Image 1 (cartoon, rainbow, N blue to C red):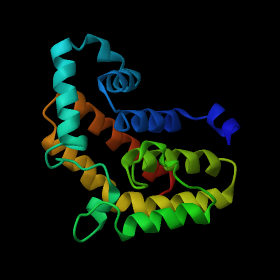
Image 2: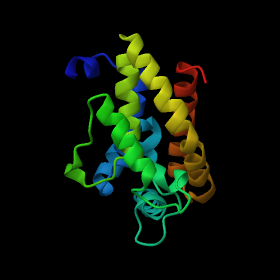
Image 3: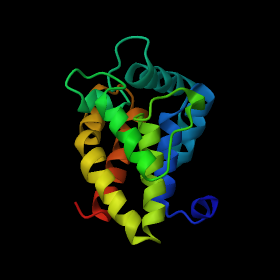
Image 4: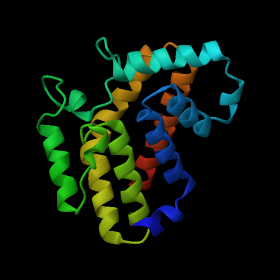
Length: 184
């Protein structure tokens, strides 16, 4: 699997950069992840970084009700709960292809960072295996396309900073490219 990550396309690398952004856990990792995504990040003032961090927490972390929860199950479940049937379904999907989430970070399997990483892994494998192209298409059509557009819309609607709006745009463009690659 390591050799696949050594030959990533720009599309796949961008997916991993987005993953890193959404898995950020403090101001340092947030700033590093955003700086890797946007070459203009170095022009942000300290105040703009603080506002972006506050916005990130309001959207994705809490402690108040999340404005754009980063969990697929919130968008796929009738009761908008984390770790519902859809989470168990994606866990089963991954198990069927021999994968599982490393729960070191204690995040659910349907967190946007896990979703992005799996999409990148499947995309990289699909370039060398028709079998993975079928699996990738299924993952995108039956899972990602069912909730990620709403997630991106919630970020656009609720983000208070240009920084977070830029990330939503990057994620939207990335999703469009993913959809093109699987010919939705």
